[in-house]
Amino acid sequence: MDTRPVREALASITSQAILEALAVIVIAALLILLVQKLFPALAGKLSGKPRLYLLASVPLLRLLIILLTLLMVVPILVEPSFENMVAIFGALGLALGFALKDYANSLIAGIVTLYEMPYRLGDWIEVDGRYGEVRAIGARAAEIVTLDDTVVVIPHGVLWNALLANGNDGTDNLMCVADLYLEPDHDVAFLRARFRDAIFTCPLTRTYQPVQVVVSGCEWGLHYRLKAYPLEPRAQRRFISELTARAAAICEEAGVGMVAGPGLGYRPIHQGS
Image (cartoon, rainbow, N blue to C red; front, side):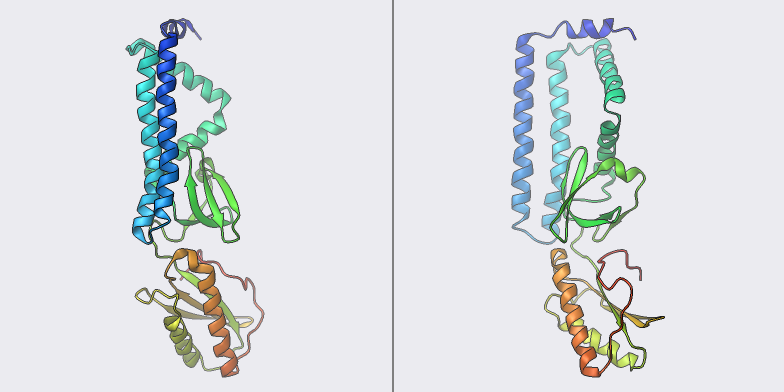
């Protein structure tokens, strides 16, 4: 590769230009830090859609600041002629392509993520069996916090080949499902009605959203699925526990026994209908 155009483009860089470029970069870094600290703090005092919209604006503002910084720094360092721009960006792209292939792959996927928005800050997603709330979206990776308060870092490049499930997709509506396996010898209509009453009277239920009690047969007996929406997505674990406890009390009162079945835990998404 002929490096002469690159050397000629860099020859015009002076110490004053470097100081000016560093000043611009420092200011941009401080702005990004301010956005990443201030906006989540403000969002923590809100609820519903305003909180989600405020959180979703953080990565977009960060990307905008980075792009504006590049547009300001390059002309400071290098004379903005067509030949110089082609030489500098061509050499930079070639170096990144060889040295930081995986990192660059995640960066590109991150830009695609910001454009397509398969998930946003505040969304509850599942990727490769990891489920949690999106708390941060960086240039290379996203961070989710699981229900057990564990932080999981997911590189954006994983999304090229992985399935992603989004429980609330930018809204504050997150369906939760409580699973019950009961003995088959009982009045199904009676129990379904009682379960529906229990869901509607639960103080954590968003009653203006659909409530369903789905029954299906299985080799263990009858499988009941209590499907409803909590007031806040973050309350999903407490909500499912409350529905399960209420349903168990109804079964005990009606003399209906519970039986062992697979997956007696709960999964707020990927439940089907």
